[in-house]
Length: 164
Image (tube, rainbow, N blue to C red; front, side, top):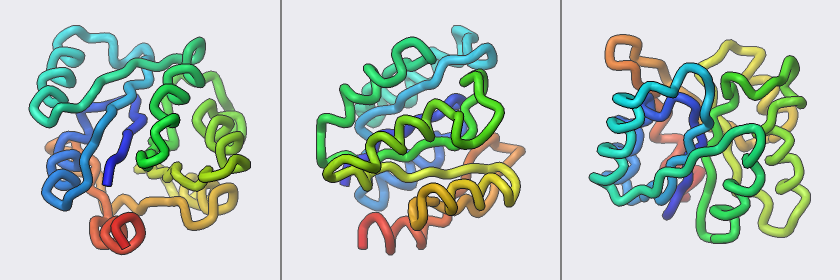
C-alpha cells in the first residue's frame, strides 16, 4: 500500500514513516504545508535526508498552490492520504474552514473519494470534528512522544483499517 502524508511539521512523522515501511505501507510523498514555523534550512535539509532514505518525494504546499500540489498526487488512485488536521497558518478559525478539510470535502464527493484519512494530536473536540465530518476516516494517535517529537499512531487500527 502507498500513502502520501500532509504535515506542517514533517519531522514528527519520522518514526511513523519507519514503522509504516516495516508494515508494508510505503510513503510515496511527504507534502509539507509551509508555514512560519518550518522555514529553517536545517529542518528542510533533515526532511529531505529522511525522505531520500525511503525514496519519498517531498512536495511543498501553501495556501496559494494547495489544490494544485495535492491534485498532482491525488491522480494516482492507488495512494491513500494521511492529513494532519491542524495545519498552522492555513488562515482558518473553524474546522470546516481548514484548507485540508475543504479539499477533503471536495474529494469526498468524487468517485474513489474515500482515500483521505485525518489524524490529530489535538484535544477531544478536534477528534470529534473529524468524526463528525469524516466518519470512520480518523486514524487514532496513541500519543505524542514529546521527548522524541514524534507522532505515535494506533498501528493496530492502521493494520485493520488500511491494510484490512
